[in-house]
Amino acid sequence: MREFWIIFKQAFMTKAKTKSFIITTALVVAGIFLLSNLPRILDSIDGIGGDEPTAMKVIDTSGKLDDPLSAVLQANESDITIEPTKESEKDLEKQVRSEDIESFLTLSLDETNTIQAKYTTLSSIEMSLPEPLRNALQTVQAGIKADELSLSGDQVNSLFTQVNFENNNISASAKSEDELNQARILVYVLMFVIYFAVILYSGMIATEVATEKSSRVMEILISSVSPVKHMFAKVLGIGTLGIVQILVYGIVGFIAFKTSASEATEGIGSFFNFTDINPMTLVYAVVFFLLGYFLYATLAALLGSLVSRTEDVQQMIMPMTLMIVAAFILAASGLGNPELVYLKYASFFPFFTPLVMFLRVGMLDLPMWEPLLAIAIMLVTIFVLGWFGARVYRGGVLMYGPSRSLKDIKKAIQLGKE
Image (cartoon, rainbow, N blue to C red; front, side, top):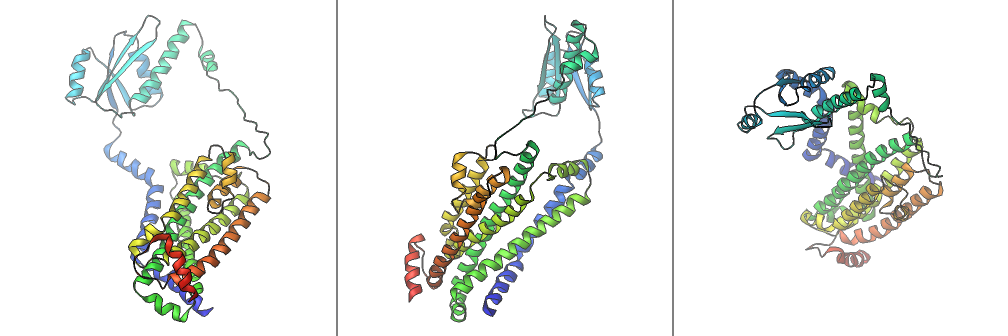
């Protein structure tokens, strides 16, 4: 057991001290603090430039829309100010083309007293000006029609009263609307965490094994430690490092958003307010994360033992990568409707279970036997894969030369018997 913990510590500390790991962790931490303070930074930049109002030249052929539009914009506290002009449309177009002005607005009323507006600009993606102008003109239009119908302000407001629509789902597996929305957010976030953790740390394990083989260190290690101990020590060591890194990101994120109080961060805080989430959902998140990691990490160690050059690692683990990508696509397809039939069957396939079953258990009230059966299948798969992986690993770490992909598994088993 002493040898196991020595390799465990070596795998953990070696990766933790690498420049790439430290730089990546530092960049992500800095990115979290930057994201949490982004509204404050943007406000300071806007403050440097000043909040000068935008003057909008308006051609009003009706002579009735300038003042109402200006009044609505002022009431909305918009930075746009209306500047009526008698210039022709062609003259203003020339000014736009020569970039003397950014844009202008042409207004008119047709025979039904409906506003006809045309916004002219050179920008194909301009949205900051047209949208508030469109909304303000819609308000002016409502006022014109209200005058035609002799409606009071209260009567106009009553026309826009929101309908009280309640979604009542009587399905045995359905959750309330608030629970479903919060569960969807939590599932979506944790799906990304599981997906990237499996991709990143499993690849790290395969690369670490291949690196030791390429430097011939493996021949020395297996003379004093059994390949099985070596494989699982690598898996647990790098897995623990990954969990620590994720916890650091989580703690830093919590501190960053708590210490940078602003309207945006308060909005994000309310967005991620999981008061209606079943605590068991969080338990399942941890369980499926750990099981998913060990399942793919064991497979990665197996595949990494078959290559003797780090350049061949990505090619060898490509089938494993495609499986986790397929699992993520399946789970993402069920965010809108987790009751799809194919998701039920896919959730019991062990390589899809960490994402797909977590999606279902997070968004539906499933009978207890379904997640428990999925967990049992994963445990059995990890045990079988560990047993088979140990046999392959025992011979694979002694194989050198060019890799012939998965065909080398048979050769590795035979070499391990010898």
